[in-house]
Length: 412
Image (cartoon, rainbow, N blue to C red; front, side, top):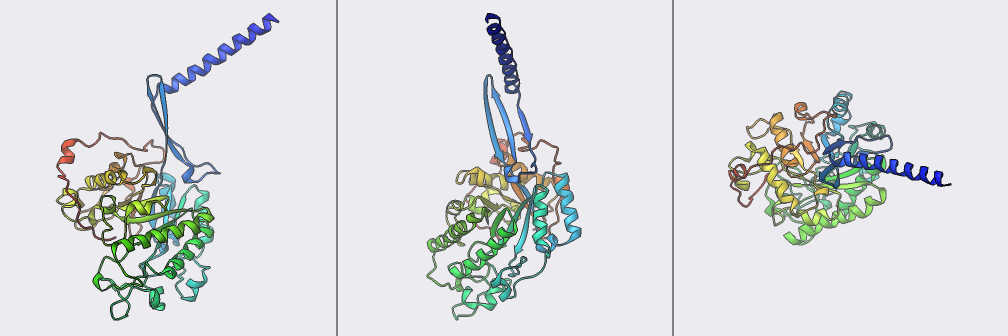
């Protein structure tokens, strides 16, 4: 009996020291591991795990990331474009597809919605979307349905009661002669939410609301709404829409996100469009500020020519956002297009990514209206590049930006 107890005790000690050896080995290293989706996972389940050590103390930090690109409805329905997209998904860090299902002209690219069909707003740009979305998901690709909410030149023309009006009662239009839905009108809310619900039924992982704002371009002084308009009421209307979206869409187990102006990360007012980032963030899973350097005015953040300083613009935008909203909800749109005379090459795109990483923001989306992207700016799937940590920006570098309070920002 004594022999048996001794053998058991010795075995226990051996097992204990083996385990402790493994623990100490892990604690002495700094590891960054990218995990990719298993068959029963989607991208929101995929995390980057960072293990750090401080002598015998071990801290394990887990972050989720999303890295995606925008596709027009027409690009999503094109076999040629699909092959190009799949090549990017299979060979780069990209794991997310943002697909237009409703654009500002009012065309809706998914069918099966009675009110859309009745107003002849359905355009068959993606005829097999019911099969395409499950296919993308089977490849581990996270799918986002982008809906342009209040800028809509189709339903407004056929239902003027839903539109923003001129003082004489005619339909108001912006500088591109596009009509807008009245953000105060709950029938306008319902129209967009029926489209969102249908997208959730098709299988999209997330619904992204764009142009969730009041008009900013054109003679906005002439805008007349269905109720008295002021900054406080405008902000309340947008938050009300998101609250209703949350109520209706969460029942369908789908995530919700919003696109907002880049300057909302630091602006303290509603910028004249009703967008207040803190209040809007409460009702969504992700917020995507459109921090395109080309869309900032000269002098924003004290930068003489923001378009030529992609790193600084995005760095300051992320820095400001993180003071106001949770990091886990921050997922910016970055610029992968040239505008304003400055060419955006791989270095300009990477500079924006680096500005995110230097703020410990690991998720981002790339915007190109034509769905054409700079492949050289993307890392491969096999690279351990969650933060791609570089030397943090020096005090001298940031001082050269000479930060000042932001002014205005142009639109997407």
